[in-house]
Length: 198
Image (cartoon, rainbow, N blue to C red; front, side):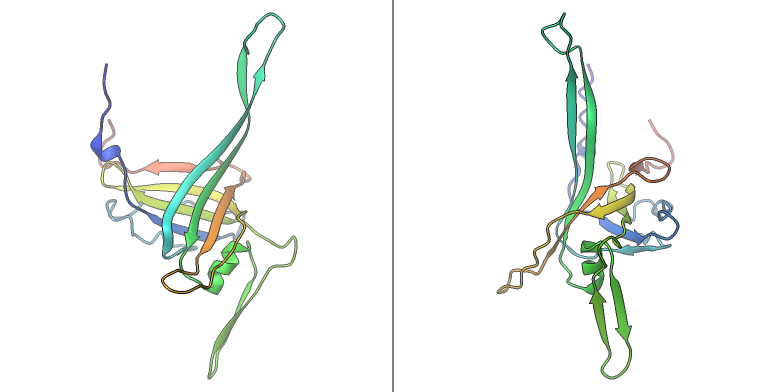
C-alpha cells in the first residue's frame, strides 16, 4: 500500500490575497502566475492586493447533515449534506479607507485634491452592500502558484478595531462567506504543476 508521503505537499507560509470589486456580476478568474513559481505576480485586471495581514489567511467551512432513518434499521441508512458554508478569514493589518470598504461590503471613498489634500470614507446605506471577488494565491508542492478563486464573497465578521499601546496593531477582522454566483462553482482551486501532471 502506498504511503503517499510527499514532504513538499506539507505547506507552510502565507500567500497573497487579492480582491476585485464587482463589475458585471463577478470579476473574471485571472490568468495563472507568470512565471508560475512567482506567486507574487500581480493578477492584473480589476484585482487589488489586500496588503499586510496579522496572521495570514484561513480557508474554512462548516458542514451540516441529516440522517435518513427508517423503521427497519437501528442505524441511519444514509447521511445527506444539507448545508455547507465556506469562508476565507483574515485580519488586515493596514488601516485604510479601502479596508473599511471591504469590512462593510461597500461604501464611498472620496479624495479631495488641494493643499492640504484629504480623503474621506462614507459607509454604505442599508441594503446597498455588495460582495467582492476573492483570489488567494499561494505556493503549492510543485513550487508553482495555486489559486483559490471565489467569484462572490461577503464579509460577515464582527469588526472591532483596537487602537491601543504599541506594539499592538490596529487590525480589521475580515471573514468572507462565499455566495453562489449566477453561474459556475462557488469556489475553484487551480493547481499549476508545470509541464506535466502525474
